Length: 143
Image 1 (tube, one colour):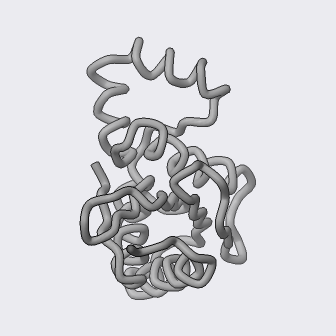
Image 2: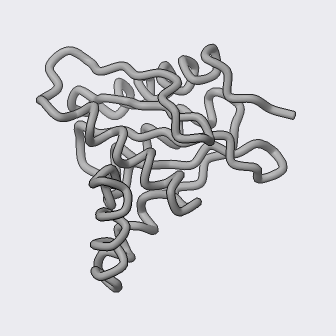
């Protein structure tokens, strides 16, 4: 059974940063959480703005909270704002419902954790997260 080790979490970050470099993205912040919602690893590039840890964490935490990538949460915010308002309330404001939070899954589809990326457009953040997860040998679920 696959495990989200510290080494694998760091591989996710390295893969996401490599994708960011290839795409010429703005400086990113990347958080990797295990399935229990605990921070496994975090890095931010030089030049990121403030609150990037909170935003990246909110994207990953939100994905874990609902078992779907934060793109799903983003769509729910448009279609069911009352759901997101309630989710924000019960999570203590820890959920960021915009793309860039991607579930980390093993080959059997089991959720091992989530990665949250922020710093560029939400679509580019999501692309970096997916690339990082896949570079570490896992499956990515953006929702």
